[in-house]
Each structure stands twice: as C-alpha cells, then as structure tokens.
Length: 382
Image (cartoon, rainbow, N blue to C red; front, side, top):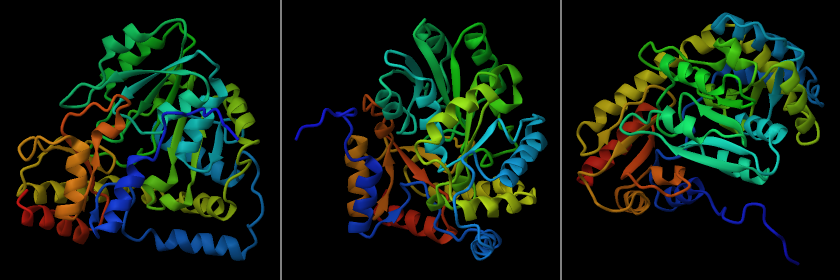
C-alpha cells in the first residue's frame, strides 16, 4: 500500500521530542505550554455537577446556547461589540481546531496565506493540507514586531488570508494600535480574510490593552476570531475553544465543523456557561500570570541568559549567545540532558529553521517549579 502524503515534510514535532527527553532525563519541563498547578475547584465542581445532572449526550452542533450567550455578554463587556450568540459563536474542541476549521472553510488550491514567523506550529500545515500556499514573513528582532511594508509587498490577487496571533506564541509580543492601523490599510478594499488567534486573550501584562479584532467592526467583518478556554483557565487537556465570526463566515465554518467533530464536550460547556458569569474568573488572570513572569525574570538575573520582553502569553524568549555558539536545537537538547531543564528552540517555529540562538521558556508554572529550574541552570554554571 502506498499513500501520497498531504504533509510529506511533516514529522514528529519538537514538542514531542523535547517532552520525551524531559521525561527520559527527569528534567524540569519549561518547554511545552501547559500549567503544572491546579485549576479552579469551582470549575471542576461545575463539570461534575453537569455530569450528575445528565448533560452527557451530544450538545447542539454550534454549542450549548447558554454558554454562547455568556460569551456574547463577555464580548460586549470587554470589547463593546454586540455579537449574535445564535449566528456568530461556535464552540469548538480547542483553539487549534477553530483555526483549522476557519482556514478549511475559506481556502482553495493555489490560495496564499500570509503568516508571520516564528509562529504557532499548526498554521503552516493547516494551510498546506488545504492545498494553499503559506507566504512566510519574519518578525523583526529584538521585539518580534511585524514588518508591515513586507506584508504589503507580499499581497497579491492570490492572497486569501492573513493569520495574526496576539498575545503571540512563541515570543510573548502583542499587537499595538499602530499594528491595527497598518492592517486596516492593507486589507481595505480587498477580499482578504483575517484569522485572529487570540487564545491568550486574558494573559496580557503591564496594563496593556488587548487589541482584539473584535474591537474593530471594519476588520471583524472579514475575520474569524479564535479563542481557547484551556489556555487561560489552566485546563489544556479539556480541548475547549470557540470561534467568533460574522454570520456569513460562521455559516461556512459550521459546514466544516458539523462533519468533523460535530459538537464539543457537553459537561464542560455547561460548566463554562455558569463559570464565566463571574467576571472575576478572567479579571484576575493578567496579574496572576504577570506575577509568575516577574518572578521568573528576577530568578533568571543570576544566569547568563538575555531575556526578551514578554508582554503577554505565558512564554518568554531568551538569547543564549553569552553561553554557547551551538545551534538552538542542540543547545536545548544539551540543556535537558546535562542541566535538567527543558526549553523549546525557537528555530522550530520557523519553516526555514532560522536560528537566532534563542530558546523559549514557559513560566506558567508554580513558583517552586520555576525556582527548581533556575536553580539547576545556576548549578550547571549557566
């Protein structure tokens, strides 16, 4: 038997490789982006109650209506944007699924999608599996900012979409008001869609404003805005997210969704529908994660790493140029094996493998985990 692969260049992800090494060498895993602290007891209790109350069969294909209504209320509260719970919100099995479904809904063979690098590793395969072409533009160091003249130069009649991600994985950068203005100039008068990955929506620091596409009606009319419950509420294993899009676009994404997952985990939907009624469940998150970021930054002052700014997400990147001239993947592997700390080499987030001698740390961990990891780095002489 032979198969003509749709992703012939895709192998095992760096996350699988590094997490496997972390287990093998009993290293502190600051690589993969998942918390190691308990999630809300109130939320887990709500899930348990939903199960015992009988919410264990299929939810409606677009999602449990009380949850969609709560999300619509949250969107109006945060972004002063009215959206229809019935026609503009779809609950999905995770944010990655929402992004894939949005791309699948709009892409045809030969279409082009502009993607900034480094980027979350699902974007390029999602584009390619749909027969479309990723057009890759490097973010500018040291702030990992978007080079808008390069984006404008890449636009042509085949450009179908632009993918944006803020707060950004893997770098922790965020979009500014200037970025939004430049984006508006580029897409105005075109048929270009926007896929806005906002899964770290509530993890943003130093009082900065989250520049959600939902704030801007002229951008929203062409956008699929994707979110994750798992990332912000410490339950990545639940695979819960949602997509917000205008009615015409939502109708298309649901055509994909109904023949893929069809619907999403019922008890979790019921629980989130009640949990999110309390605004404090997400209001406390920026300060909660900023405390972890600041603690990690202070700890790392005793090392030779040079940390970049992290304005959002629970990731921070660091240059190791004062430590080694190794390629970042080799350095990350050696760090796991010899120092007992696992990171992710940022070259893994470039299709080209571009190596700036930078690794990514996840600081979304307990204080004890962060202290243990940095203690190992110091002991190792880094």
